[in-house]
Image (cartoon, rainbow, N blue to C red; front, side, top):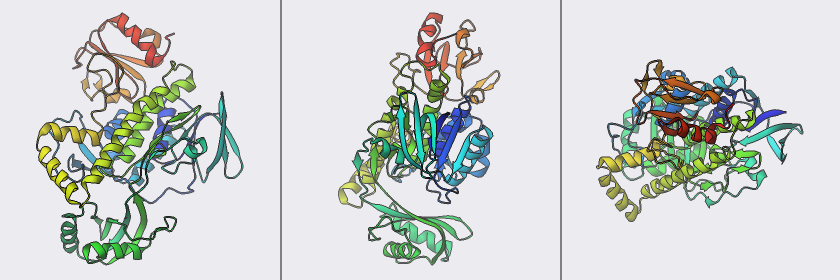
Length: 474
């Protein structure tokens, strides 16, 4: 029997596979497409996702293949540079195509021993108290302890489970393409600037050698969403907004997307869970979708591994939904707000002008940017110490950077006292004694995802908190 089946080989599914393999969990990823998609819908990683890559020793693979940009201008296109201290050692956006992100994560998953089966589409599933049986379209079946649906907004897993997906259907759609434009770059840039003075959801970003990433509203394009968009559709829409099609030709790919906004009623049904777009869909405003999925996987991976490995305390796996569902709800709300601010209606434009003024205040600017970058997420652990529930920023230690100590996805007791102990949990927690550590408490217990589970200096208090996250000691 397989430990965990993952339906969907996009960034969320592959990131989850990596996390599970770090704990020795057997993983098989089922991806329906026989080859990786050439479509790069997402184009960047925000600070929290960059931290995740750093915590797992992956960032050095990504940085040379991306471009770093200052944080700012990501909330409905309102341009404001980020405040000086965003609470992270990675205060930038890494522009990198989704295709590259998928490739690099896939390489890592294979290095760790994950099995990826392309051309394997899920057709059915059933479960009992001890296992899940997946039926593939070719008629074969696979048994596993758990199954996770990371199979996108039209998730087969979610539909098979009958999980409600409430929200709003798409009210607006766009065409998205990588296409060559024969018009000279200066003319394209000037025309795009003119259109964006009114329509903030229009754009043409040069990728080099005449290739552009183009987005344009799709109003008037065929209502049949099963019909793939054509170059003629793109040319017509470009002309309707810019009075020119820029000589668009030879598209590498063309797609359409909408602003449907939905959130799964629950993330778990028995031994089957949802993550990424299978659990939530929203407009791509602020570039949050891929990042939200990666962070789902990062939260879920160690908890699911604990269940498979047999040391998970009661309720640990359910804390995945308890922590991540509110985060997704907040992302849905901020993308709804951004969508409203992009309207050309007078009332929406008045709101946009007001928010633009308010974002001159550092506290407002910080609050908005922290929503998009996910750097301010604090899970509610019920503790009184201000560190509890927060993710720990990187810091220098005697043995090297903190994030360098997190590559193995184990818990960490960061101890400046030298008198505490996690002896009964040494198989799942590393004890780092460092009097140099610049902490807001004598010691901090970190979960494998970098969030502070406990902060204090008393051994008995520590022992009272360890079982909640790391099970019974040996």
